[in-house]
Length: 177
Image (cartoon, rainbow, N blue to C red):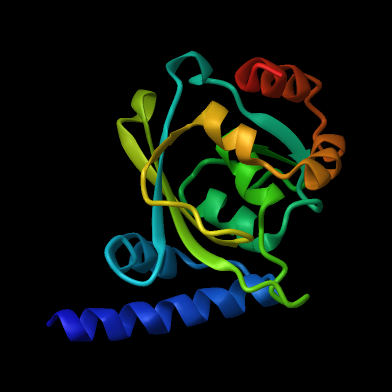
């Protein structure tokens, strides 16, 4: 049975790579499959410890700025309103993922990573899949650790895209910069 699960997981990772490369949305069944199949096979599972003081803190960004691959995962888990055609709300950990998305068309190798975090107000664990630029060890990260890891060259472009002026302040406070 384990060999069959590995085969299915490898197939799923290849499919998710194609979706990220061509910027196609992820469907709900694919997201559920990623949640169950990829926790033990073919990718790194990165656990994020959600800070309780940021329970209601989300960033606003123009929907057209973020890749459909990213937006679809937020919508499928009801982390944002799919009916709002102009702006999208997204949690601060997705900032790290967006800044470190691998450019699979441009020749980046990319490392399959499954991010998960427990959100206490909803009593729910959320999952987010992406190929990122570097390999991260499997462990639990705090939000401040993730923001310290972000690449400085890409951070300016993401910071300029957000319409929430508190993003820079939050990043500076969490990183103790």
